[in-house]
Amino acid sequence: MNSPSWHARIGCGNEVGGGFLVSDRHVLTCAHVVAADAPEHGVTTTVTFPGSPALGPFTATVVAHGGWHGAATDPGDLAVLALDRPVPIEPARFAPLTEAYGAEEPKLLAYGFPQHYEEGTVAEFRVTADQLIAAEWVQLEAWSAYGQPLAPGFSGAAVVHADTKEVVGMVTAADRDPRIRGGRMLPSGIMARYWPRLGELIPTPGHTRADKAELRALIARAEAAGVEASPERLYRDAVGPHGTLPPRERFGSLWEAAWYTLAESTDPTAPARFAARLADFVDTDTATRHALQRWPGGQRQPSYGQRQPSYGQPQPPYGQPAPVPAPVSRNPRVPARRWESVLVEIEHSGAGQGQFIVSVSLCRGQERHPVGERSLPRGKVKAYALERISEAYRLIDRDAHELIAFALPRQWHNNPVHTWKRSKDDPTPLGSFSPVVVMDLARRRDPMLQHKLHQAWQELDTRTTGAELHRVECGSDQGQVSLTRQLRPRTGLLGFAAPPRAARAKGQFKAGLNAPVPVILWPQTGCEGGHEPKDDCPGTSFLDAVGAYVESRAPGELPYDIWELRRDSDQEWARQVTLFWEDPRCFPEPAVGFRHSPVG
Picture 1 (cartoon, helix red, strand yellow):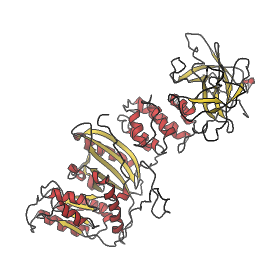
Picture 2 (cartoon, one colour; picture 1 turned 30 degrees about the vertical axis):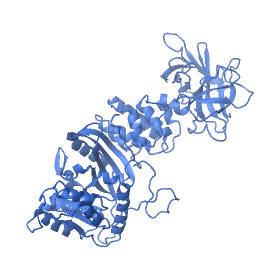
Picture 3 (cartoon, helix red, strand yellow; picture 1 turned 180 degrees about the vertical axis):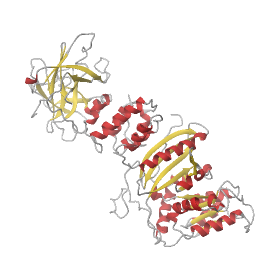
Picture 4 (tube, helix red, strand yellow; picture 1 turned 90 degrees about the horizontal axis):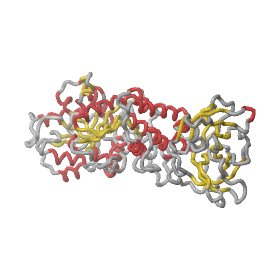
């Protein structure tokens, strides 16, 4: 070691151990070294720095504790000491969490104070394996068969990478059999579980010290606001169905779950999802909820998996995801529109009949930033969705075009979401305030249909004119399978004269959903079908009007065009029209697997 000045010697009654400086006022050591430091014992803890003897001894008090209960195998053997005055020594630096492991077995050093070594001595080790023992310790073994073994006086000593001089952990125990010459180390990542401030000092890819300090403060504010959220549930939601399993059944705190997400998840975007998911449970502190949604620094993070490259970039190697082309407009009248979508997904919950899972996210193409998710009774779905839609607008770029997309179960398709009042203080219909479209939740999760929809949009992008509207008239008796076959090769638009609830239209509507038709339109109310087409039929009049309007327009621009129509037109058909519009390139792929256990 070039400069051991931040190594400390800890004395507490008859106990002597090591420690190391992590700030100008804080030293870390083992809890069992300072176990006697309590007011009722009348014992004073002293700290000296052998590398800087002129500084003299410092008095210290225990200000944080890992929860150690006194037995050698109890977890949390960590104590944080506050010194009576600042130390003019540069504190220790921490290594990345994987620095102690590797095929080359890096040499590790510990600076301890065994008997007869008042000034300290150095022992050499390696890590036996990158495997935690009891989700807490890493096993150390001697670097060679000779040299200084671990002994009393090494407890609390920093374990340091010999080349980088950075801390990877702390010695907590020695093997009782002196022939083994090994011991145990509390890794730095586990130490940060017990003292949150330490997480700011340990490098974590993709997040700065300021990011972690902000997250720690926000978690503290959320706890002060009385948030009730399961750390395990937040972690699972953040890392997804294929994320790293936690080291034990339950986390001890929200910070422990957040830190494990920062330190162990292989997806660097998982911590932002953790923060956004926590925000959903902060009901009483609006400022904290909004800050958690924007953490870190208002960045948007991709959904589970890799971020998709933009169209026009080189193709990835075989076996990696192919690039997803961005939506373009070939219509010379209209420039290509860059949508940023507020995606509202509503699905039946396994929690009971009448319960629904409502999930709101901000999406930019294949990127997803969670805004909120709750399991709610049907009567509370609308209010919750509208509140989170409003919050999602804080994340939309000012130069992007917003789109509100509802992915609904099939029983909800005719729910007039575009007529929902924007808020309790504003009766403006949501569809007049912003572009609103509807999608089918089951179809979004069907890989075959999604593939076909990609092909359909690629065909539509090459057109310089609008697409033809395929009409399903009131008197149509075409069967579901027949209509699906007829629609399958088509890449245009589909229009129904009757709403999906009409008895005759139900099978035909399913046919439209089972075919890769990008755009479907129907009236909210009107004719129930069952008769031959006639001029005075409201369904026929609707198809005439909507066909004349949409066939002259670019399909990719229809959300914006229908929004303008709803906003400006006084015609009845314009207020009645529902726009089912799905371009897979504008939305991230849904998560694979069940996100919620019916019996969880």
